Image (cartoon, rainbow, N blue to C red; front, side, top):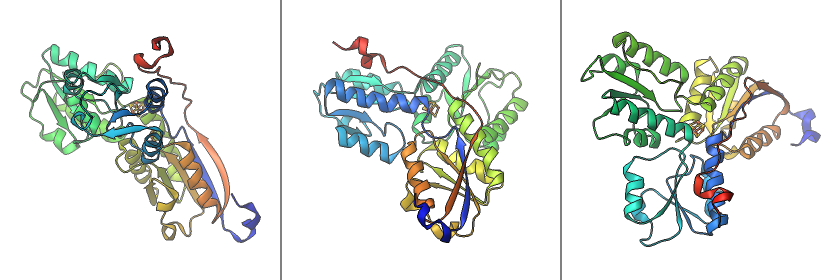
Length: 326
Ligand code: SF4
């Protein structure tokens, strides 16, 4: 920060959303790669970006992690660990890893694994599973891939919920992606429930605590500010939903940026207040970088808006706990 030149700079009230940034599933997944590097040495193979954040991925690459999209890209016969990302994988992936004799470590977030289990139980009970989520997202691919092809019907929008034709309307259950918009999902669920009143719901909300808390914080801050910055990657579902939540709450200028270098300063020129949040895969150091960039142009008055307290912690995957080391 550069307070010495503050006399010339316009004032900017900054409302920092709390909670923001890393969730327990992301911390666990990153720790898993770091711990595997410590225990087994490089290379450690990681299937897909361990979390959707370039800064994190580049940092792990520098330490010896090798990122691949598919298992066939990993050299045959390797004894190095192969880690599955926090988003989860289809059942076929660990099966393929076993066929290749890979030392597989699953860093799927336990809250995604919970959704996998729910889908599996519904299927075993003969229910058709409706998954509310975004096509092509790795978590959705992983959840759909828990069941045989055709067993899960994906519903992405309210419109699709209105048109959805199940095989047996009296025997349905739904699950959701963990990182959806709370409001959009509530609308889709309400439409499906109205059409299929006996549809079985999750015991506990599938949208995870971190997604919920970050959206609530953004919803509190967004109506009070002229602009909102969400730190996160374009392929991060929960980050995109935060930006949309800010816009929906009436914030005129809500943008998603990965680094300070991406900020379009012309668009921020005349603002007097700014909200700041970060997606669950964005490290706090990037929030600080963005604040420093604003501090070079404005005199900042920073306040933190707390809307929830988080103390969720997930232990490392079994193979990486200290009691599993030799
Ligand atoms: S956003 Fe939620 S589901 Fe995804 S890794 Fe974090 S805690 Fe797990």
